[in-house]
Length: 95
Picture 1 (cartoon, rainbow, N blue to C red):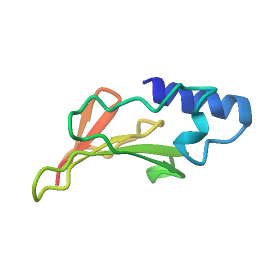
Picture 2: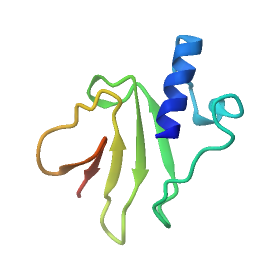
Picture 3: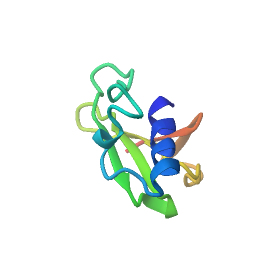
């Protein structure tokens, strides 16, 4: 959640969302935090996310041939049911 909090603090201070995560350094974060998911280290940030969200985070969690993803939508309006599985404030997308 430090990354989510930093994005929202940036928005509060600037009136817009950062165009890229590196805009958060050094004022809001010392560095982009790790995902805590072993080999799955790539965090994708998008302004103008899906389903009306102003931004979203995406962590690639694919293994082998699968293309599984973790998503964070600030509005928490994930689609109901398969292939989305709610995991706290995140959703896991099963391929």
